[in-house]
Amino acid sequence: MKIKIENALILPMTTPEASYKGNLFIDDGKILSLKDIPFFKPDKIIDGTGHAVMPAFVNAHTHLAMVYMRNYKDTQADLFAWLNEIFPIEAKLVSSDLYAGSRLGLAEMIKSGTVTFADMYFFQDQTAKAVVEAGMKANIGFTFFGDLADSKKRVKELLPPLLPYLSDQIKINPAPHAIYTTTEESYRYAIDMAADYNTALNTHLSETKKEVEDCIKEHGTTPAFYMEKLGLFSKCSSILAHGVHLTDAELDMMSTADTSVVHNPSSNCKLGSGVAPVRKILSHNINLAIGTDGASSNNNLNLLKDVNLACLLASVSTGNPVELKPFEALKCATYGGAVALGREKESGTIEKGKDADLIMFDLDRPNTTPVNNIYSAIVYSADAGNIDTVMCRGKILMENSQLTTLDEKQIKKDAQKLWEDIKNR
Ligand SMILES: [Zn+2]
Image (cartoon, rainbow, N blue to C red):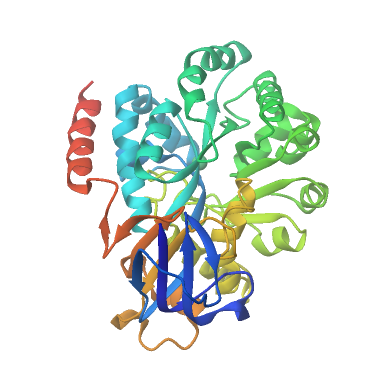
């Protein structure tokens, strides 16, 4: 299908200066041209008057179907007290819960401008199925907990149903949960699996002070050096969620590795875990992406809120109001996410030949009038409600603020009903 977006403010997100007022041409799901093409006959014209068009967000760390546990026992002393509340209810989840929960999460993500995400949860085939039906893209984390026997059991039971979904649309990332829940043997097993699939390993790392202290006690070193010892940085690429307590020595070591840190500011604030050293990460030439984490520790999947918070937290934690500038934070949430997910050749910027993964902000609203700086307007003034059009690989997933591939009403009803059932199991 040929689509022309007319008279919009286009933000390619390659450089701040690359923005222009004009048209964008899409053909067969790809960006065909940023320059006007004579004789282009669109099948569809989207009026971009009063709108900004930018690459869709990439949510680089989430646990999609945790939407069930949104606001559930979420005021706990710390990460570990909260996990003690969450693990028992998660143990009750069955495969069909994951499908309905994933659909709810996807609806929320599309409505807030995300079309690609890195997940880490259970019954992965159910999430993959929901993603394909919604017309989105995902890196599905194949989660490991516990010892090697447990990991091998997961591969035997949960991998075969996921394999048929693997494609350009659905990628796999072996995902050992964290150092404090997964043994050394399981990590080594997951690292080898990532190398075999030529994909990234996705794990939580250096989220809390306690995790770092316990890691030193148990393994004699800090989390990133422990990962280095296991061969993570030499055998495969990696997506490291949180990185709040990474040391200068760890960042120096990681600067030559193919690794990404995912900043999860809302979750880190909510669980009191601390503030990730974003400027230090960037200045070490380490890719920085942004994630929402699960909706039970955030408590939403709206990445724009995390972009906003990333800027505010960087300022308040350093006393420097330009520590993380709006363009830079938006770049982390688009291109940075694409790099983390190994998708930078297909998404993250608006460039000729890339997938048409696009979102449109309606700027003709009170909260975005007047626009004096477009990147500040998006990060500090706009909210998800300004996003009215969302596209993934040229397929329109939301138009006039209405979802086109998902039945929002039914999804909310199904999830509500299942959650009542899960609690009573
Ligand atoms: Zn997480």
